[in-house]
Image (tube, rainbow, N blue to C red; front, side, top):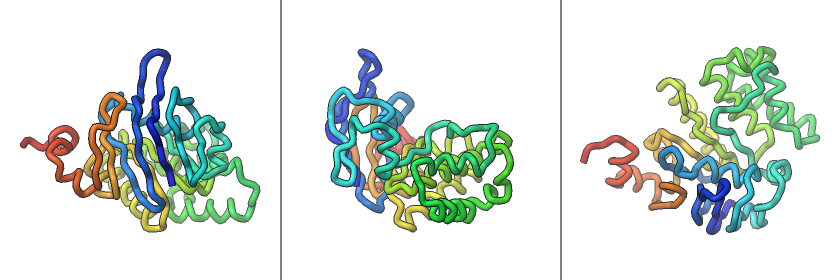
Length: 236
């Protein structure tokens, strides 16, 4: 579904992503792991069309999309729930969700997807008329994921969905990702909780200073000594 080839992205003279390549197959959860500054968020923002690559190619569903405007990429089927959630705090829950469907004109379908989000996250339905800024961090994360889902994406990109959340809320978010995977949603996941991410992932890529250092199946990365030592805090 998604193929990134030799992607280079820079901020001025500083290369944040240095020629990475990876793939995401339909129906998979694929993780990008790495410490702060590794280039994970930059990669997602470039796929979304928010940043322009210096070089390389991005292919989605058989079509090249690097250089395509961000709003057009949403229309083609890629949605991102960004790091930090980026909600509109004074707007209601429902209005935030409807903004996720801004490219759509199928009113009945939008209403059906609203109901789906409310089923997945009951608290959003119960408080749909409240301002998003009144919600806890975990509830705001649910809203950010729900908003991304409202474009009915073929590929859902989640950037640090558990950041700043309590362990219980992190478990809730990870269960939601597992539920979406079970429904056949394709997910590209950037997540600081490497163990939780890899348990959900068919495949994982580990980035360091803008380069992919190694990759493998989620199960095998969980057993990899380098991952255990660096990302899982295991003393070997």
